[in-house]
Length: 328
Ligand SMILES: NC(=O)c1ccc[n+]([C@@H]2O[C@H](COP(=O)([O-])OP(=O)(O)OC[C@H]3O[C@@H](n4cnc5c(N)ncnc54)[C@H](O)[C@@H]3O)[C@@H](O)[C@H]2O)c1
Image 1: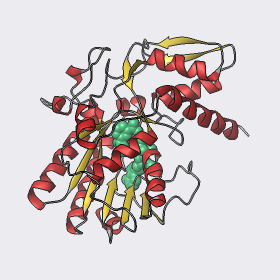
Image 2: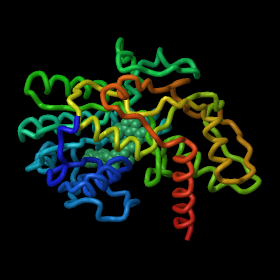
Image 3: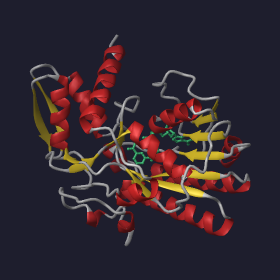
């Protein structure tokens, strides 16, 4: 543990125009790294500059991956064509095509350029659907990944790239770290446009609702998930990157709530009087998904600290503020 002194290191963050990547770039910059931030587009929610160098590159092209990686010691590969349940239920070919290209070229470029270590952001979507049919999910352990039956095309691509990381490590000695993120949320994440995830979508709906008013819930609201606040996720990423652990590891929380409970918490934060209506034809994903953190706690001596209540309050206030600015 703590095998990396980050001060002065050359660090690449891909997907740095997105939610987790932008927060990570800012944290690494604050820790004294030279941070090269790469993305195909910039959402611009964080105050710039939160990096040392910014390159706008399409990482589906191998030459761009080589440009991005040149002279870098450590690589955090977070770039992905992805979104919430609405997006990943609908888009299959582009998700597979884009993400296989990004991750294939990034791994090969990392190998050819002898980077010291590469981080890959996998997902809870790699876990088999047959383990997630019950809203009272006790928690998915890392070993539950096989026999494989991932959640849709997005989950298959993540599982395939986990295997590519394993192969590059075995055949070429590329030092890899793989986190399986479980629903990361917080301020400065996507909150509109179709790629937003459930906490951000519900915060937006509640913030836009009249008082008294109503919001629409996708499904019957009894589907369950666990949610991890961005600050805890960043700490988990860094601890994993500093560790000697090369197998995939869950980064999330084991605090399970139904979508109804999540919505009620957000409604209470808003102080509004809001009724929930249900769209039973909308995508709702697996019935119950939770993270088992036994291994992460043991390997990293890490566990999330932020309560869902506190994290949602920060997120709600940021989204409410953004919506007010958007409407000016
Ligand atoms: N947020 C979560 O809850 C969650 C859960 C599981 C896994 N993940 C994974 O974590 C990573 C970061 O997720 P996020 O929530 O910050 O998503 P995000 O969509 O906010 O960020 C991803 C970024 O990748 C960029 N990108 C897409 N295609 C690109 C390309 N061809 N070239 C360069 N950049 C490209 C996007 O423009 C975007 O800014 C992703 O790999 C995602 O699959 C996230």
